[in-house]
Image (tube, rainbow, N blue to C red):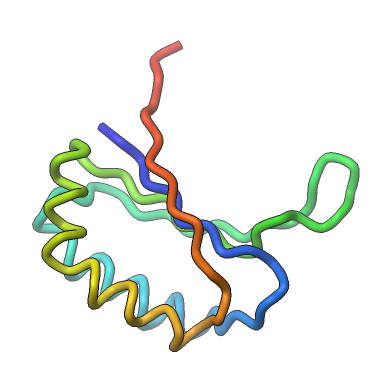
Length: 102
């Protein structure tokens, strides 16, 4: 299992309605059959000291394996990333995470 974080930095306008009603359903539609097991969206609220968070929106995407994510990205990544300008000008930061047992 891997988790892919897609983080949108603060500072640019962000059309949350479009993101939730159009973009994320596109992600689910294209990638669910290719190994996407869970998709979660969170909004940055604050940092521990109360200052603004560095990221306004984060998508947390769980895939069965790195290979599944790579295949999904190869197949539909162009379409999904081409949709980003429809809801923000922010440059998305993508990070691949490996959950650890503890």
